[in-house]
Length: 363
Image 1 (tube, rainbow, N blue to C red):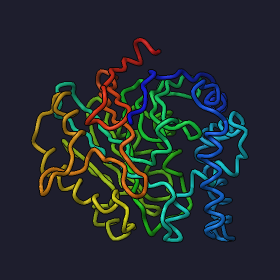
Image 2 (cartoon, helix red, strand yellow):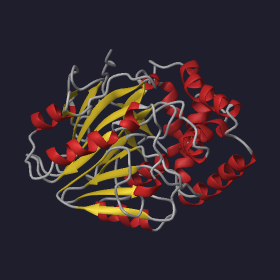
Image 3 (cartoon, rainbow, N blue to C red):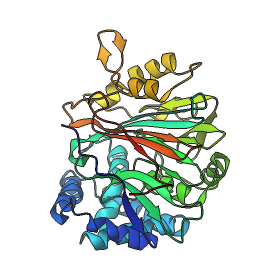
Image 4 (tube, one colour):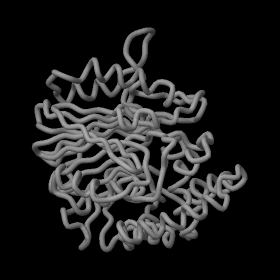
């Protein structure tokens, strides 16, 4: 079943106010968000993840992110206030992937995604992503338009989930910087900016890929995951380690759910029995064979993101529910020069694409 598209919602004011305003969405209940946040945190407690080392790590994370991404923490405080959640529970929830990596524990919600960017499209530099995540997020994922005095790069369009920071999956700001991420489990985490905060911080502050890369290089990172970036002239991929990052520039860049750089490849943490991890290499190999050297129209991009595996052909770019409950929740195309976005809620093989001219006529 595909989620219903209702257009982007407007969130205005300070980072805190925009967080609180998430709870004004008429299509979501406080109970839904509590179930999405509290249940996984309590399960983590039962699984022994929140031991003294984990609580010490979370305390250090709060201190570091308060110093280097304070407005992201303000947004989380607003979200907690709006949905009547304890801040500590929500902060812990956002770190559950990291905590499960540290314990080499199976995730309660499998996050994946295939993302790429290229200079070679009819509309110039473009970021593309299939969002692969737990089906629990089908009814709470949202497109939102953020406006506020803290957004030095102008308003931003974000794809994320209610109960989480703005650019929880992807986004683009009015300067044309577009970002998407992919989840990559890693055996090496540390204290630093959490990726879910990093994406919003980059859209908040940076007007170009180079500015974003400079911001990334000036900070420590919690580690894990990759970013795909584009502006009106440049595309890049970033693999996020905790002590180092690996940056790739080129005409076309792409990532699935494992590190490929020599510096970080050996730290990838694979979970056997989870489709997203087990087909990450197949999806990456398919993109390697399909993307480079090609010029892409909007229609051909949309067709690629609907690709399935068929015997030895293709790859599960469009993911359907597996044993871990993960699936492709949505697909997004972000065009940096025109600031135009195309969004599809649900599996791209069977859904309807919508054009979002958000800087011209926000809904």
